Length: 99
Image (tube, rainbow, N blue to C red; front, side, top):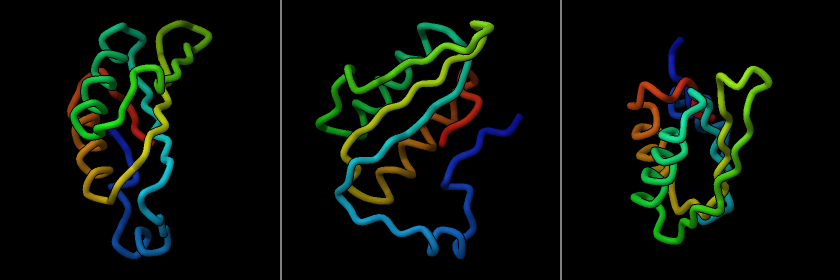
């Protein structure tokens, strides 16, 4: 399965999506149901968002308990910040998808 994110959009698709920064921005991470996944998300967010608070992470377990969906809503400051967050998250084998 390929890790997907909005950074995988073509330039034309990206132009169609306009975001005014700074703004409240949610990122959803889907991956293996392990404590390490939440630790990874917290570390990446802390590295890229100065006002990040661990309590901003919402965790939802799949019915089988094999997967987790983590949603983090934070103040995004620009496209470069978002691209860096998505890239760092997609590097981990624990992460299946970033939205």
